[in-house]
Image (cartoon, rainbow, N blue to C red; front, side, top):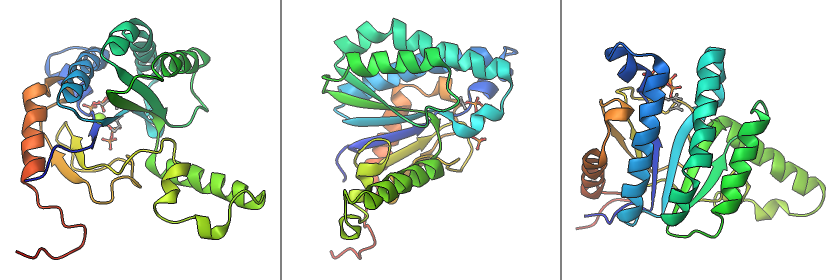
Length: 235
Ligand code: IPE
Ligand code: IPE
Ligand code: MG
């Protein structure tokens, strides 16, 4: 049996379909998804999970209608500002992964505020992936490395698959368990570098319907997996 994972990642998918099924606007699904994330983050923290990465908005989600994009950005600002006290009380540290470009000024401001206010919290780290793409992250990390090499700040020999992590948006441990809700069985460009040996749990539930007990079920699945990392098990 495995221990609980150190790092869980969630592709929070299915908000739109959750709303559609109820004859509601897609935005209602995002609102409900926000509440679900709140509950899951608290539950994960209480279970002793150290790192939780969530996919909140992908670089490709800008292809959606302006109305939907703006609603999502307003919702994020609402959470960052209004839930700040709760997040601090819960001792959760919030960090972000993704590109700043194309994000509204007020969103960036709210992100900076919550990062600053929670920086000393240490019970659980919540990595919010916002305007995030996995391939973009690898490209951005490579560009940082190239610049440092150019400026003579590092040597070619300093770069390997472990030190590469230092150049990603956040220097976090590899993902142990990836959960994707909403029934799709794909990665949609999420945390590709960190996902190398992640166990993957797909749930047909739409994200707003994925509750604490469902996270428990994902953890039971994870604990039952035999992680081999390429080796052969000797019994
Ligand atoms: C995930 O739910 C949330 C975001 C991508 C922001 P979707 O909005 O993708 O919901 P579906 O997949 O259309 O149901
Ligand atoms: C992935 O979901 C992005 C987020 C959950 C934020 P999408 O709904 O954008 O992914 P695709 O388009 O179904 O692959
Ligand atoms: Mg989707």
